[in-house]
Image (cartoon, rainbow, N blue to C red; front, side, top):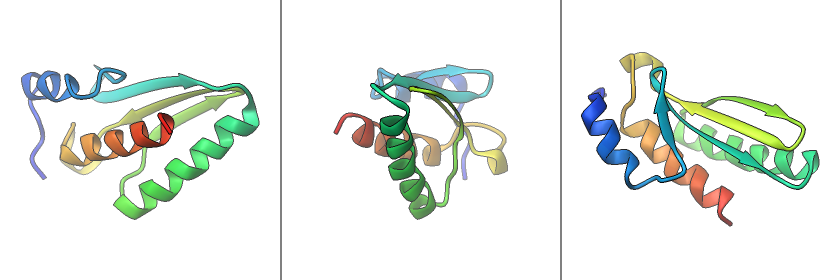
Length: 94
């Protein structure tokens, strides 16, 4: 899988305004009304991650969720990361 350059990443992020690039990963943060809601959304994302065979680095504290994506095998950001980010956006915006 082809690793994107920082210029390509910046261009691709224009399609995902809630996502940023930092320390070799694209990331998004979100807050919800409760831990239960946050965990439910994480579960929905987890099923999609399994389907795409691509898994985030993420953290959850009570009602906040931080998601970081990169492709370890490629040593950077690839199309797999952007595809999963788009899927995550669909879930978060539902």
